[in-house]
Length: 100
Image (tube, rainbow, N blue to C red):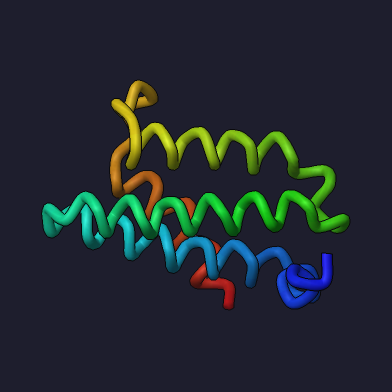
């Protein structure tokens, strides 16, 4: 838990803003046709989502975080069965970046 204490001190909008930065990097490298780098940044965003799921203040958002993880995995690492676009994913996370 100590290794996550800095994350847990951040407000949710800051946590999601940090995740959004990783997602934006994943999108950037995906569009540059660098799938390995895109996957690395996607996995980092997923790792951060899993950390904020453990944050006691976010307990009521577990389902939302689970869905966000599935959507990122599907979009960047699998076959995109949810038919999401870079733009829709970016729009979701950019909303938190704008609030910082």
